[in-house]
Length: 274
Ligand SMILES: NC(=O)c1ccc[n+]([C@@H]2O[C@H](COP(=O)([O-])OP(=O)(O)OC[C@H]3O[C@@H](n4cnc5c(N)ncnc54)[C@H](OP(=O)(O)O)[C@@H]3O)[C@@H](O)[C@H]2O)c1
Image 1 (cartoon, rainbow, N blue to C red):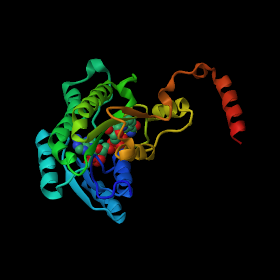
Image 2 (image 1 turned 45 degrees about the vertical axis):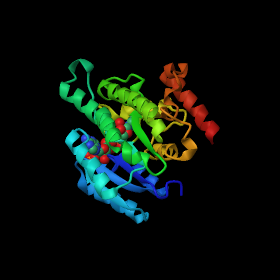
Image 3 (image 1 turned 180 degrees about the horizontal axis):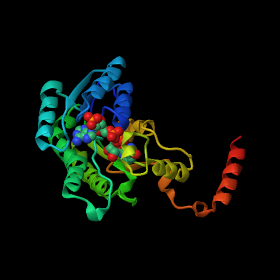
Image 4 (image 1 turned 60 degrees about the horizontal axis):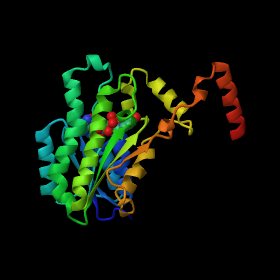
C-alpha cells in the first residue's frame, strides 16, 4: 500500500474531515497519531476504527491554541512514537460574524489555531519529517481564503494566512525533503456547518453552484490528501489544491433566472438525466 511503514499525525483527526483523512491514510497503510481537543469519547471511537483496519494508533489530546500543549505533543511524538512522515493540520477555529464586531479573542484564536499551530508543529517536527525519505505537510484550508462570504472574515483571513504559510514552508523545507501543500475545500457536510447562521443556505449555495448539484462530503477530500502525500505528487509543491465541486469556477447568468424559469430549467435537466 502507498503509505506502508509511514506514520501520520492528523490534528483534529477524530471527527468530520479529519476523521475521513485519518481513516483514508490508515486504509492506505499508514499508522495514525490522532490529536483532538476535548471529545475523548469520539477520539477513542475513531481510534478503534483505525485499529480495526490493522493499523497502529496513538491518541494525544492537545489544544492547538496552546503553544505549551503543542510543545508537549511534539515531545511526546518524538519520545513515544519516534517517527513522523505526514503532518496534516486539520484542526481549526472560527467564529461567524461582522468584521467590525469581531473581538480580539476570535481573531487571535483563529490565527493561533489555524496558522500559528501549523508553524509550531512544522518547526518542531521538521527534524522527524526529514528522516525516513522525507515527509509531507498538508494544511486544510477553505475557499473563503480567496473568496468572500458574509460573516466569514474570521476564518477566511486566517486560512489565507495559512495558505501563505504552506507556500513558504514548501519553499524552505523542500530542500530538506519535506513537501508542503494546502487543500482548500468548499462547503463540506460536517458539524462545522451548523455554526453558520443559516446552514440550509450554505447547503443550497453548494448544491446550486456546483455542477455536481450536491454538497461536499469528507470523503471528497481525504483521497486528495492521501495522494498529495505520495511520491506521485512530488512535483506538486507549495500549491493550494482547490476541491469544491466546481463552486468557484465562476458566476453563471443562469443564477439570475426567475423562479419559474429556474423550475423550467430544472425540469429540463431532470428529463435529460432520466
Ligand atoms: N466543513 C466545511 O465545510 C469546511 C470547508 C472548508 C474547510 N474546512 C476545514 O476542514 C477542517 C476540518 O473541518 P470539519 O468541518 O471537519 O471540523 P469539525 O467537524 O468541527 O471537526 C473539528 C476537529 O478538530 C478538533 N479541534 C477543534 N479545535 C481544536 C483545537 N483547538 N485543538 C485540537 N483539535 C481541535 C476537534 O476535536 P474535538 O472534537 O475534541 O473538539 C475535531 O476533531 C478545518 O480546518 C476546516 O476549516 C471545512
